[in-house]
Length: 68
Image 1 (tube, rainbow, N blue to C red):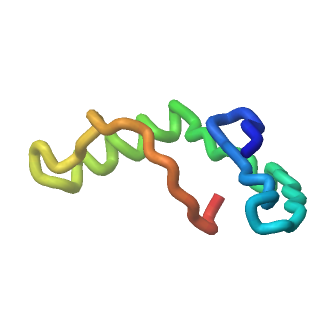
Image 2 (cartoon, one colour; image 1 turned 30 degrees about the horizontal axis):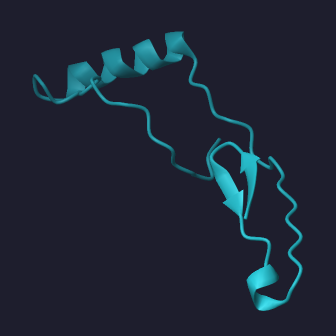
């Protein structure tokens, strides 16, 4: 097993008599929301939803979508 950083480990395949090649690429750039646009969206949502209907106390999550 080889530690390649970023908390990733690769099994080398020797237990099965094979060789493993791993190509790690960064194909997606992170989406970083514009703070001013985020405030505008939250302000608009707070006018539409009931009090307490807009939650901002969330931890960041890792997701993927096709709209960025």
